[in-house]
Image (cartoon, rainbow, N blue to C red; front, side, top):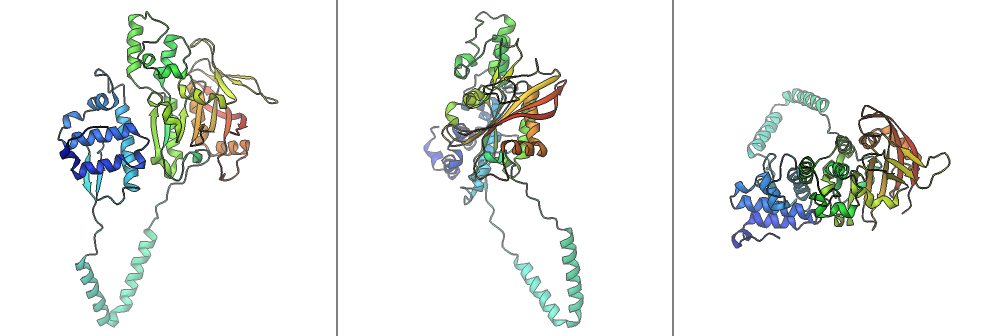
Length: 428
């Protein structure tokens, strides 16, 4: 926890920051707590020079001094999440606060704003209204005209009034991720850097190895004598955060489908996640184990599992562990992304191991498959076919956990004509 001086502790603005970071909205977000405290402390001490993106990345997130903010957007991502968390606090636990904390867009300073009390009715307006009523009572002959004018005004107002249409709730299966407590749903996008590192290293990587600092820094590779070009590439991959176009399509789909729960979505890179984060909460994992290694964390619960021969030199495929009548034992996808032909993906809804949350996994053999999974969920008719395939009727009272294998026809990298190949209802 950040040490602050005695003068700052007595500042009502810092005391507000302490109440915010101690609230339930921030209990599972240690990084957001540290970020808010750092931004507020530097702002209140009048040190704006410390609030550059590069300085925040080094001081709060432990980034190396030579890291590039162009290639690594983690500070901007976390600040966006912090803005949502602050909004969540002042809409909930902090609705009685007399001041509001804001982080203006395009800046990293904290702005403290007093809550404006609701204005009382204007005395002048009240006197004017009283005088008008007295005038009407004193002039009976004018009353019919006044009533006609009042009728005209109310008719025009009623005709021009257009009630605001509230966004709909998220449809199934996304609805299973949003709980009444309005906790955030963390969308974990693929780590393209990891996928490219696998190709350079030509080796499969376990989740345990992926989490090791030596692997992420590029020092734990099979090729211990890289060429100068490979060394530069590895340095770039170890210090940047990249994701794919397919992941952007999926995130856009999730944002549109979330409806009135849109503000609950939080986007994270697979590189930023830690095992303890999975002890509670709701998640969406985008990508297969070869681009998002966290999917392998749940692989033992899935019937359709990604397989690969020689890394970077063999087409990936899904193995059907328990084939049913009419099903294949393997489903092979595109040789490489950007080509034309069939690709496959799975859409799976699973519970966390301890039952304290749910996980939606959208994984394609190639980017086309992952993109097709997102587009499949965006289409109401496709969702209805999925509901029928797994036996969902209406809004189920309890989560219906399932796994669906889908096939898409890709043309020059663009997926279309997606269909359901097989489904499984999961009984955890």
